[in-house]
Length: 203
Image (cartoon, rainbow, N blue to C red; front, side, top):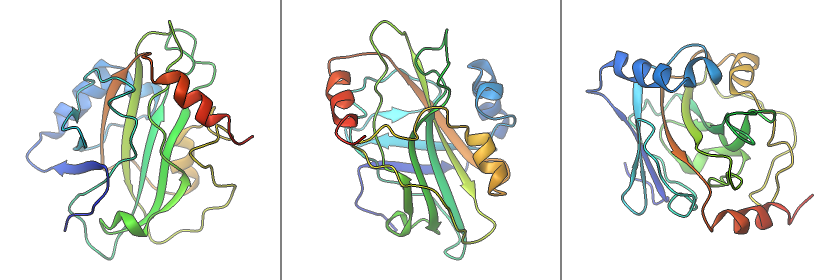
């Protein structure tokens, strides 16, 4: 089933599991973000047709819109989808690691419309002169429908976004290791000040 969202995410069944591990290790996603690489590749395609995989460089302008997601799943299972930046404010000085860009939980099967947004989607906003940032998508299969506490974060706020740790989040909620993942890289462009202004609308 297809869902009318703005980002397409699918699990590439034919991808060799070690290829995901190799790419994640080559770019230090393992161990900077997670200790164990997922077994499957997430195919992430933005509405402009660009595919975010294998650390390809995209621009903040190209990834500014909220995504749509599609993958093969048992309708009785629940999933968590996370997008995180481990390079905040820069890869050389990641003192705010990680910056939370999107957290969607309790997705029933692959019906994204049933998911609960703990943090609404924001695109890439790497500060000027901080080089390339890695933006990592991870999909977790939940043990069941879960209760998630804490304040929800809108796409007009940076509150509770810095110093997020997806590995700790997954451990706390007993999500295990991610079942699929991918990432792209981005650096500053002229869209970034607009995103930062948007994130200042709510304190």
